[in-house]
Image 1: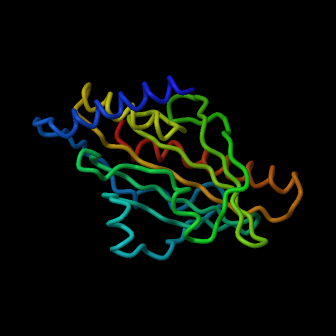
Image 2 (image 1 turned 30 degrees about the vertical axis):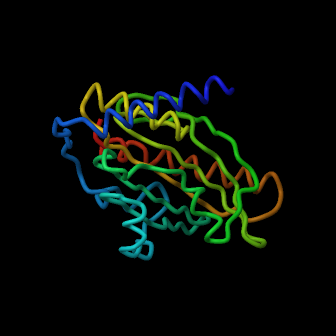
Length: 217
């Protein structure tokens, strides 16, 4: 474990040095706005979440984002956030959404990974994402989140940074997105938690083809 941490640290430091001193103008791919993501996903209808303040946007460093609550008459809501970074060379880098939770009163009580099938519109593929259960008082939420860049879905924050360095050297690009999906756990049983995970997974599977088209490959 120590060896892996040291190797990762050296690679990240080397990559940071490369990014800091690179003089070639970065390639910024054309893309659609995050607002182009569909407002209807399966039985859910999307409604805009309250807009983030300019201060919060500045802290996050995102170039484009979308925050929506998807409402269904037959199931609890699903919340979607996608933050897009067209470049991560100037210090505006993606970070885990869990960094912000304690300040909002939410505490992680479970953490792990979830793997399931998605389609990018052309092919089926398995993806592995972060799976968390967070709690504030008696309320619990299931959270799925991942980093997405150039057709990849990446759960690990460290791996996403290594890929960023690799793509910067290979493609002269550091664009990427962080995707977060949340939904309430409506009871205290294992079955309630499993139902929330199934709901979040179904939503991701319905959204994923459009998300893949909206993010540059």
